[in-house]
Amino acid sequence: MVELINVSYSYEDKVALKDINLKIEKGELCVIVGPNGSGKSTLVSVICGIYKPDKGVVKLFGKEDHNHFRKKISFVPQKVSSFNQLFPISVKETVLLGLVPQKGYFKGFSSQDLKKVDEILQKLDLIEFKEKQLGKLSGGQQQRVFIARALISEPELLILDEPTVGIDSKSEEILYKLLLEQKAKNTTIVMVTHDIFAIKSYADKIICMKDGEILTICGAQEFSVKKYKQIYFED
Ligand code: ADP
Ligand code: MG
Image (cartoon, rainbow, N blue to C red; front, side):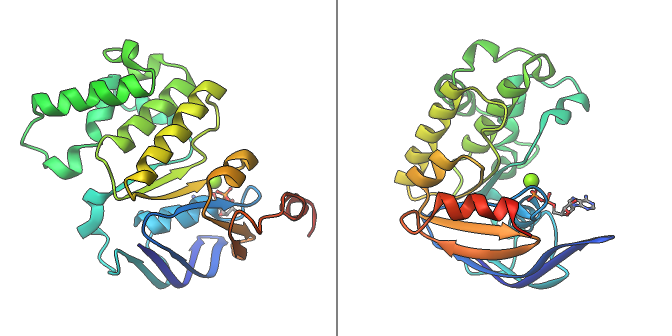
């Protein structure tokens, strides 16, 4: 589903990814861990096709053409709350944006689409906010709206960057339930998280990063919390 071969990426003054090689299979729930600044967000942005690597190859669905797969990928970026400052968009409209790549811009939305909005907002316990302006919701509520936006298109590849930051434990539980539901439908999930509970309970594969490199790739059984914590302190 996802394959990176010798991928490197630099910002103007910073090498963020050094020679990354990885493979994520269809239906896998893959978790990316590592200290702040280790390159996790850069890595998922490269996987999504938002950043083009300086070097190396990114393959999705076995091919290099990202644009072709736009309709099958959903991304929940890290810290999305500045989005609502661009214009006064409602919760419903934000969630509908998740369908735009599949629908094309000029076809309009059907009653079926509006039904899907209601369903996903119900699941995420957000239905009461449907007509509210996104910017008037709390940070955690907005984060859940962006999760709804990502899920409404029923993506084949779902990528989430620290989705549980700022959300309460009930919403966290709902999110993990929804992710498991997606996984049961064979959706491939890539999630950046610091949540040890999620890592131990749900991950099929754990990619551990530091300083722009992959330190280890392992399964949940081999994952040692003690070793993981050491990574944060050693230099
Ligand atoms: P993580 O998500 O693991 O915290 P990031 O991928 O956001 O790490 O960042 C990796 C490195 O790249 C960090 O050193 C960070 O400071 C740097 N970086 C991230 N975004 C930018 C940017 N837009 N411009 C310059 N440097 C950046
Ligand atoms: Mg990050």
